[in-house]
Image (cartoon, rainbow, N blue to C red; front, side):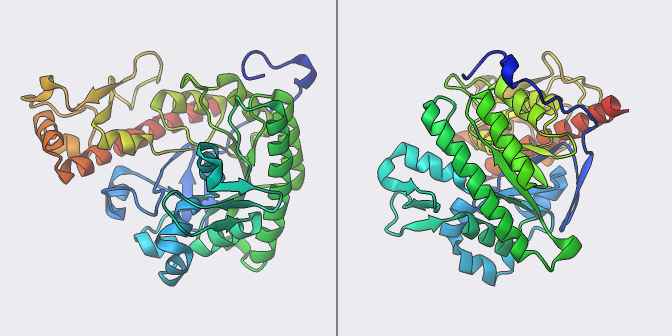
Length: 382
């Protein structure tokens, strides 16, 4: 089952209550909802830490799958962890790498395999094979200095067969229990400086499986949870029913991370369901490809309904002589100091300044969006 109404025989959870407004983490407190730019390989392309702070970014998402390859775990540790490597003093969430390894193996089974022990993979073009177990994933994330550690999980696509979904849930729960044990062993003496541990709810489009997975993970006990699996269907549409059901399964005192959700409209939809953390490469990737986000109304007063934002395609000829900024409602460096005409020119000639300005703008848009969502949520909570 991938769409439609949740069957009566699995209807039960209704986690009503106020959502948390903040999270206290070792590297600082962050407000909720929260968007995490993906610094997948330890850097947000084209930007430095001061740029991110100027945009209003509070925390970053990084990825074990990529970082254990480049620059490598020994290098990261020698440089004082990810904070020392990038010069970022704020919180960092480290994705376990499960989704990336799943994608790699799904693309070509010769690149690796999954067993009860963990994941074995060889990235395309690499002679070296890597092994990632639940224990190793936790160990690396803690060594990297993560503020939120994410359990290794067995990811599936919503369209995979039922037997694959069952195996995924069984393995995800087993691995989560091993992650919990390893995490507790390694942070026993950290006290209040301990990072948080999140588990990931799998189950594909099967609502009963999602429920079983959530219940077993809740029994183990974690600080927060994540939406497992790719959040879109084969047509690129948000899996609305699956996402809403997963939120219902988790009590509202626990923050829920909509992993991989960053398209502005989808982010707003998930935030209204009660999701509190979001990450995606989309805003920064779109920026580099010339698709910029723009509020079509004052973000400080927007209800975020109907046609509240649009896309600006910088390569369009109509911008060749435009003296207007990307957005009249944006206070980023790109919009305060530069015209669409210049951005159009920089994009056409492939100048690196374009990538920096465009990325600054899209991230500032996301931070303005998050600020508005916090106000709206506060109003709903009273």
